[in-house]
Length: 283
Image 1 (cartoon, rainbow, N blue to C red):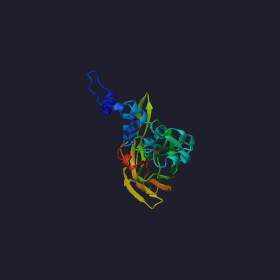
Image 2 (image 1 turned 90 degrees about the horizontal axis):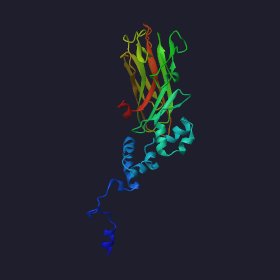
Image 3 (image 1 turned 120 degrees about the horizontal axis):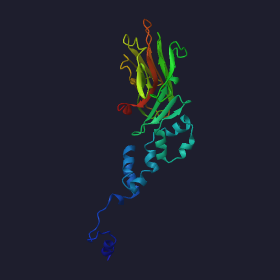
Image 4 (image 1 turned 60 degrees about the horizontal axis):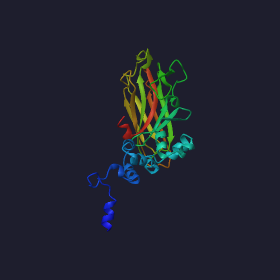
C-alpha cells in the first residue's frame, strides 16, 4: 500500500514514465549553500539560471561571507554612513564595489568585485609635493583620465619629491602600493586624445627612488627610470603585509629624484593606489 501511494505522488510524463529531477527542483536553501562556495561574479551568473538560484543569490549569509572582515569599520569610520548597514548584504557589497570618496573627495575606497579585497586610491591633492604651491614648478590640470578632476603637472624643478601617508585598518593579507604617473600631458581636442611632450626632460639621466615603510617596521626601496611617454603607468613601490586586522597600519611612501645637478619636468602625478597583491597581479 505504501509503495502504491509513493508511486502515485511521483510526477510522470505523458507515457507514464517518472520525470527526471530538474535544476529548478533544487530547494532554494540547497542552492544557497552551493552559491556560498562561489565568487561573486559566478553567483551573479547562476542567479540567472532559474527562480530557485535567483532567490538564493540574495541570501545575506552568502554576501556577508564575501564582504571584507572590516566592512563595518569602512561604513562607520571611513564613509561615515551607517544607513548602509540597513541594506541587504548583496546591496551593500554592490555599493562598496563602486568608488566611494572620502576625506573631502581626496581619497577613494572600493572592493574588488571578484574577491572583495579592499582597494584605496590617494589623489595628488592628498600627497605632499615639494613646490606644489609655486606655479613656476607645478600646476593642477583638469583631466578625464583620472578618478579625480585634476592631476598635478610638473613643468620643471630641481628637487623632485612626492610624499604620502595613510593609516588604515586593513584586513589580513599582502598589499601592493603603486604610483600612477605619466610623462607628458594629454587632453582632448575635437573628441580625440592629444598628447603634449613639451616639458619632458631629465628623467633619463638618473632613476627615481621609491620608498615604503610601515608602522610594523617593514621597509622597501627600489629605483627605476620613468618611461613610456604619453601613457599612464602604474609604478610599483613595494608590498607590505598586514597580520593584525584589529590594529591600524600606518604606511609612509615616497617618490623622489633629488639630484640637483639637473632639472626634470613634464610629469603628471595622478595618485597612489593600494591593492591586495592578488588583485594587483591581474591589473
